[in-house]
Image 1 (cartoon, one colour):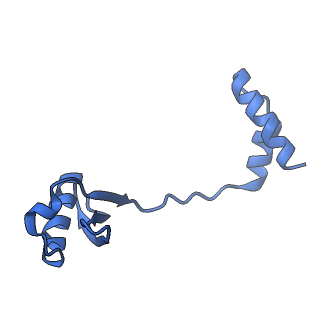
Image 2 (cartoon, one colour):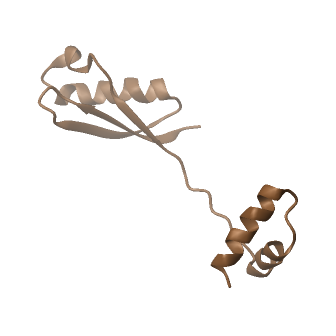
Image 3 (cartoon, rainbow, N blue to C red):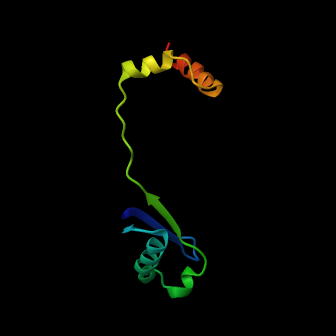
Length: 95
């Protein structure tokens, strides 16, 4: 699965260069990013001797929560002491 990736590199002058690409893996993102950023760097191949930063941006996950079911769950006892403690804390947020 391809994901949106932002590849960043800081040159020897401290200037950040970045590009947004689509890639299926971390290494693919790094290779494509370096290849596309290299013409912008006058230092050539040696300008990438250290590291590049790869940010992988995944699509957000969206959920719809039925408020009545949420309130019912909140009123029910927790199955474990930790869940009960968490519910007690959450109850304080919705008086």
